[in-house]
Image: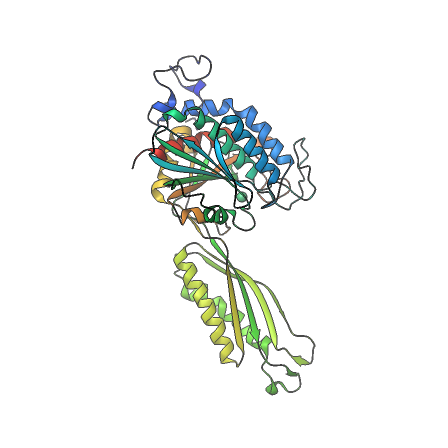
Length: 429
Ligand code: NI
């Protein structure tokens, strides 16, 4: 069965006159089904040359988190061209566009992140990064372009929309959690957002496929610092001091029991210490050891348990050896936990657009992070994976690597999906 259903493949469809809209009613006035989906996809495919130009321009001019000034200006100028009102400067370089329909109705937000990475672009293509050491190696240029494409289709039909669409162009996904900054700046208020949808390119999935996680999609992240305080002494007379290295060794060993002994075996969690530093000389008992690490958990409940056990374990073990552990936890990203009813919307829109065979359901969460979880802590929504792999064209490299690229034709699918999700999300529950 064809997994990709373009309008040209539909038997009995009227020959398109001036595009795709000459059947009984325009797509935006019809219920979402595979015919409507095909029409939206055709409209999105018509935008591909425009989108490829935008994406390649962004790709050649990558900007790191909170430095997205050129990207911000480009987004604003395109919103201006489309006649879409917006608020600028939210969370620093964020832009929030607003498409108001014909009634108050529900409010659906669509989100794109805009920042690039400090990675050298190793691709041999004309549109490779022009900035040494910076690259859109996570596809956020594609996310931004897809949101602009969706905005263009939605604003064309704004008088028929039974609610409001918010367009969140977000900074700094890779660094400080720009989602949190946008939320703190009020991006989900006035009007209050009822549902949110976001996508991420996935080079492990072929173009024309979509990856879905029901429930947990990405782990939380917390930065961990443990300082073990002891008392210095001559190495020949350790009984006169408190050995922070021996205490730290016991703390490290004991922390290994948290995931194995305290966390439900069906839950996912990781406690990793990345560095350990202590001591000054071979014949001095160390009075201080510093360790830093990362904690990843797939749910907020597990996260609270693990962080509490780290603090209790480190403090008590050190105390038992006469030392003192100082535990500092710096919260980083929330876990991404999809709302299953919102993800069901994405499954339905994917099915109507691409067919059942093109949907991959992932059973395990990804222990990497994504700041979309901040939105999902506030409003129901869904975050999903858009296939951008094209083996025949050699587009197979993972994100965050210098050879990463995307099959640009997937942008039309992303636009169609986000438009369909927005329309479904506007429908009264
Ligand atoms: Ni990313």
